[in-house]
Length: 221
Image (tube, rainbow, N blue to C red):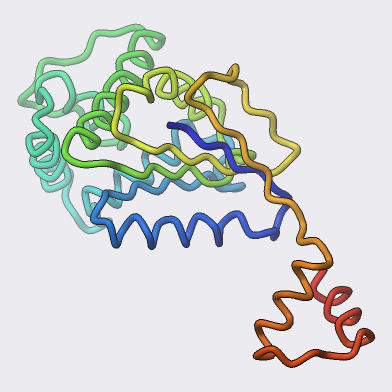
């Protein structure tokens, strides 16, 4: 399933995601979190690259050989074909071409397609191990390559044991057509009765003067 969660800045999208992640962690499922950031709107596939760097535990002081060793170990753990995948992921991570593998003689378009296929294969392999929650936060800051890749992956989402949660602000309009496995949710502002109920819960049931509640509503927006 795919859930698209939208709402204005500061309204609580990240808090909802945080609560869902905590619940999923208690259930023992895998969590994958991809962050789209304003400083990387022109960095191709930045959220996926940043996540891979964390997954592989790459450090600046690691040699290129050490990073490639970590990459091979992780790909082997997923049962993915090293000959095909290692050079693609190495290029994605800006590592020099592995000497033990045949060089990639691909056009830029073909290289991009194979890289997208490799990322999709990795996500599907992750979901074959156990159910996965994959969160893509801040799609309004996503780079074009990430949106293109996501569009391809979401077409295959029904075959993977993965709940994909996408968050964005109202000004962003997802470029994908609605599908049966998509659910769109909008986080709206709290109503006055909800605010009053929350105030009562915080005060332990003590009723506050109407003027005080009015101040709370105004100051907390």
